[in-house]
Image 1 (cartoon, rainbow over the protein chains, first blue to last red):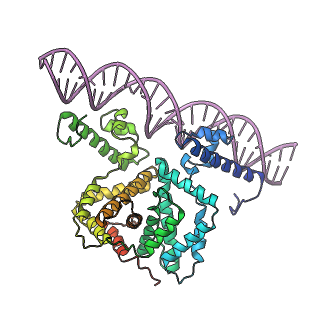
Image 2 (image 1 turned 45 degrees about the vertical axis):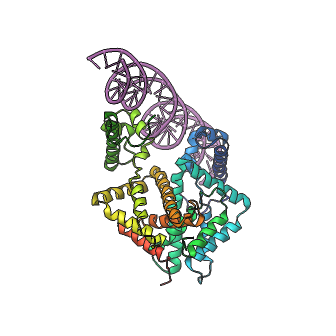
Image 3 (image 1 turned 90 degrees about the vertical axis):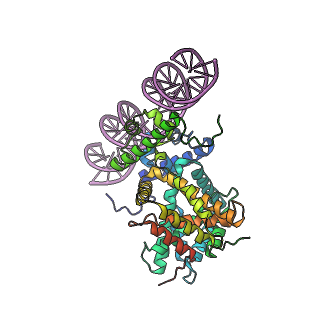
Length: 198
Length: 198
DNA sequence: CCATCTTTTGGTAGTTACTATCACTTCGTA
DNA sequence: TACGAAGTGATAGTAACTACCAAAAGATGG
């Protein structure tokens, strides 16, 4: 048992594993896109990646997990922590998200959009979505709590995080949705949700 | 094909169907509680309800759907619509929820709590939870939009609804959670999420 | 009351995601 | 080069679901 630090670019074994994992995910997502989620079987994905079905399950605990990606978490946290402390929590969150989104390539945004659409469309994947949702609340709560010097499970901080993520999620079903909608939603929340009768 | 109004207390057939459905759900939830969700098979549920596995799937499209209940939707909508229009949308939502919760028996609340815990604990059920979550956003948005004379898919109204439901959901993970926490969360949201450094 | 039509049901035979296990191969290392 | 560890494939099994068909039971007109 090694120290489990980072195996990044070591032996052939690690490299091969990384390649197999990437191949499985890429072929999986491609097949999902081409023929739909249900119509794609593990066998097909394994075959496309040139491994056995057994091996698939050694890399991903389930078919759904192919879609689960949390690459952006660390980036978001970092972006938030560099926000000046003068900003209110809600504005800091908004600006952190804006910064991260601005830093993505069009391709990244495209892929992320496709992932979200897939999750919305396929019932099985909505479990994944709920998990992501809860994870995001935890993440926002933790990071905001730290900034305010409150405990991580502070009631008000968690409600704040829930409202932020809920506002963001509410934009997911907009047909023509772009990432600016997410920012608009947070702006509206920052303004105190000023709804008035027209 | 009849007029699909309400078959409520008609022929023997309807009554028997209602009984079978209730038996399947009750035995299912009981078995989930007693032996866990995974350990309970459709076969066991069907056997307990004295029908065949085939019949189970005629009543519920999947095992998960046993847990899905939306009895409260109509009640909540009605409670909201009787709120005086002077109240701001957020206060009206809060008070409507408070009224509904106050109207439940302790038993109802207990059962509802158990359902939510089950959904949080079992991965497969979180898909159901996400669906419920989206349905709740839609419901709040629709009802608030009507009150404000805006279209049902109005951007600001949807963000409002997302924030409300997000705030409510954020309280789900509190270990000692009671239904008052949901109201506290909405109060905090109504106050504009006033987070300040201590 | 009976014949008939419709709905509901049980059974059988799939498919697919996923688990467990075991022998075999491949890689890292002394 | 020999040995241990890690990765792989194959096989057999479980359980959620689907499609289908024939039998049973409730509804309906004469």
